[in-house]
Image: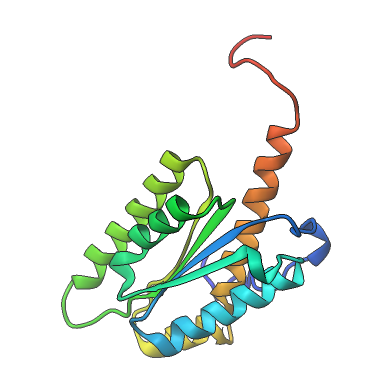
Length: 173
């Protein structure tokens, strides 16, 4: 579903439990910094709204979007985190460069999440132009930083629910 069809920045706050014990990493690309700073602001506001403590939020910057998965891996290695949010913006240019970067970042983030068994959240904007980026970084389609943070909270919450259901085996019961 496209952003124009649904603004996920608007959600029911009561659908997410308090996250006062959650430890969250955030990796932010310096490329298109005006856009990524707005994404970061939205993510931080959302985490704080759900009681994530300042001392439990670990933020690092990386030069560009391509470095987001490595930044996330470094955070996961250095801190005992529950989730990591990756924020960046790759605006289409004159070549297909954006396709290669976006695909590599998506694969890197997915693989890191699967290998670490921690939610690693894809908060990379992939717009065709600057206006589309601005529309998704606090503009008419909301702030995708808010959406990335709510996704991180919901996935961490889901992991806790599944963990607390008790030990079961895979297969027939």
